[in-house]
Image (tube, rainbow, N blue to C red; front, side, top):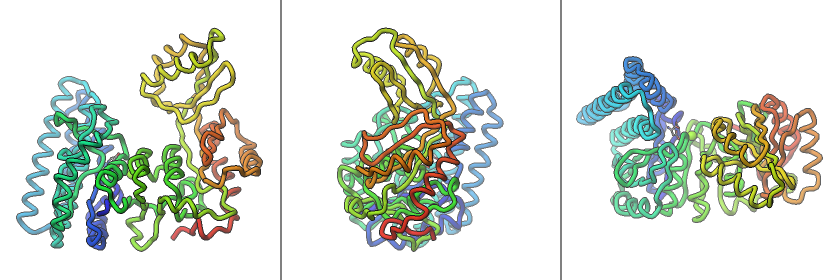
Length: 465
Ligand code: ASP
Ligand code: MG
């Protein structure tokens, strides 16, 4: 079997959904499980409705929801016309709308919005979109079966960033989804959402439908996981920032993991984890260019490594803050680090970037998690300085290992920048620098020019279609 995940722009309207249906149709012999994201912008709208309700403004919140439900009804009407399918969809949507409005009333009265309630709101996006796709497949005579992810995607109760309980998920998938495949049915389910053991909806974090797909793929030992999106594959850089990007034909699991962790938006950072262990290949494909070959992430892919290729792709992150800490006392170094990391851990803050000298430590964190109470707690251990307005640029590629010219080329491109941190060596295929956020476009383009624009490596890169 394979897993086919379709992102929000692949489902944004009836034409896009018909395209999804035809793509699924052409893979029926591979026994697909179809994982659907919410339609483009739906999750933002649901979040917005929830926040509006929390301000006590039930009317506007309901207005946002009416428009959202209207968008789904329009797509549904354009896609399926035969009864009883139309009636079924209409009834399901009316029920969802009713429930959402009840949520709005509750939140507006309490003026309180917990992560748990936010997840309840957001869970509707994927449920709505996946129902339409399932009905569209059925319209074309395909034995699609809509499955609520709550039947199998059991998670912990970390609302907003829930993690799957893999043993339970695996056995539920075997009991519920596998028999459908054996009957040549096509299960259609939702990405992003899960449910606690006591049946409360959770989400695994924004953009996590990719992660859902790889969880299902790993649990069911899929032959591959396909991520259908709106770009040709993994590119050498973000095409909205750099003009001359190329597509990377293939890369290793580790390279893809580093890239997604350090900001490449094409894949959710959790995606690689479930599949790495089982070595299940992941393909990134463009739903608007069905014949493209996309990017293949696979074990063997790591062997494809043109001699000239040092870096395979460059990712960046914005909105970071660098925190520097100098201890009050020259304590045992390990104790100092332990204290710092235990505070970060308590706040659920992760940092991909740490630099140390003997007595001080600096790290970069997402500015969104930078709260006064965190810096206050850190002050107990040392003098804290916070430098906001930073961003990181991360070069990824196995070819970086033991390349003596790497640093010269890197520092040339970095010359105009104000470098706050640099991390190299911990991973043989990653080099990350933290600079001022507003210098990112310039440095990114300079690095891209240096490492990609004159390179001739058609076994690794391909022009974009
Ligand atoms: N619909 C969710 C979001 O927009 C999950 C996803 O699209 O992957 O964040
Ligand atoms: Mg996505």
